[in-house]
Length: 259
Image (cartoon, rainbow, N blue to C red; front, side):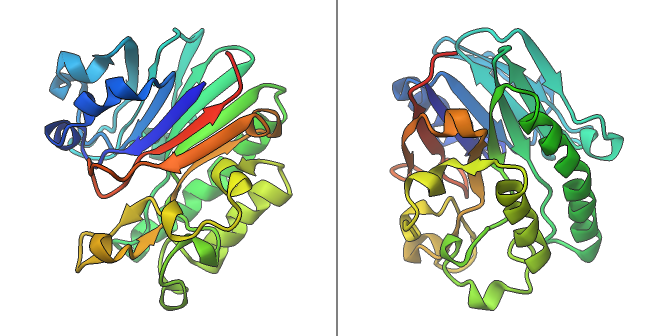
């Protein structure tokens, strides 16, 4: 089973850069996308179905903002939109494809980089999301949560870690929150579990400022985080960088698992 996670930074923008021409060649079973920046009326037919994949979406109420989607080859038993937290469900940050024994989730955690107000919103999201993650990991299903977590967990996960210790995305509180997911709840960072020492090749986001992409001054903030059973069946993972569809790069993981 191949699962792809990609922050599109606007589905219409990514389409003009060839995302939907690229996707059919990837042989994906599930594709999780984030930052749609679109509403249902904005989506062309080729955005909602591609190469046998059918999309389901959770849109933000605010136009041109946030939004997540999940494309599935095998129809899920149900689609779950939102966390049940009105503040963040209005921003379109969570959608779940439920197959019974397996669930694949597309997640877009808030960024706090634009203002202190948004950083506080990010902290509220983390506080609300943690008990949901605890509930999920205890439910007995295999679960893969794909998306833009907007946190670089460890020093190896970004180029300039020393100068970013007081910046959103690498704050001690954010990093400690992720550590709790792994150490207390038992979730597994699939890519890092496979490749504990990969640094620059693991980055998934680069600022549009300066020469960040050209110099590979990146951050690893896009993850596939999974329950231990399916994480143990991940056989390979890589970040696709041959084409650029947004300021993020797709994270592709292959699992020895059949839903």
